[in-house]
Amino acid sequence: GTGALRITSNQLEVLGTSETLAKFIDDGAVELYHNDSKKIETTSAGVDVTGTVQGDSFTLDNSSNDWVFSVSSNKLVISYAGTAKMELDTSGNLKVTGDVTAFGSI
Image 1 (cartoon, rainbow, N blue to C red):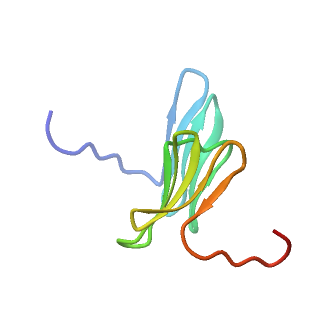
Image 2 (tube, rainbow, N blue to C red; image 1 turned 120 degrees about the horizontal axis):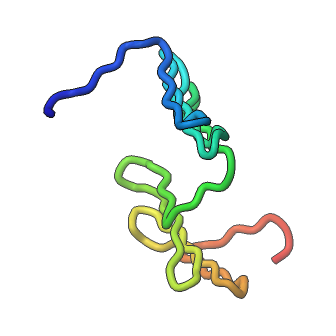
Image 3 (cartoon, one colour; image 1 turned 180 degrees about the vertical axis):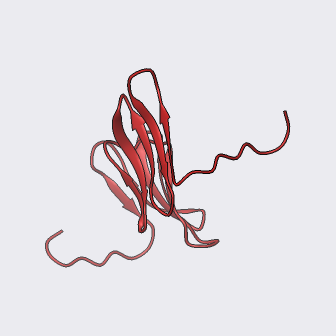
């Protein structure tokens, strides 16, 4: 059909045959489960993840000038506003665009 499906409740649980799949709590958390184990939960501060977070890239939102962490050609690349600022390769070689300030030994 068309339109929205609306379910009214102060707590909604989605259950599988023998386990919890998700919980939606009024004025509270949304919880997502894998194999009956909570993995993702919204909190008043943001999101809490139990386990490993995996992705192709990670963006720290800063309006139009975002920091982006990604992997390209086996290098960790850190970019700002679309320009690569640092690259770290698998041998431990670090390439930096711009000045380097160090506090300690290099």
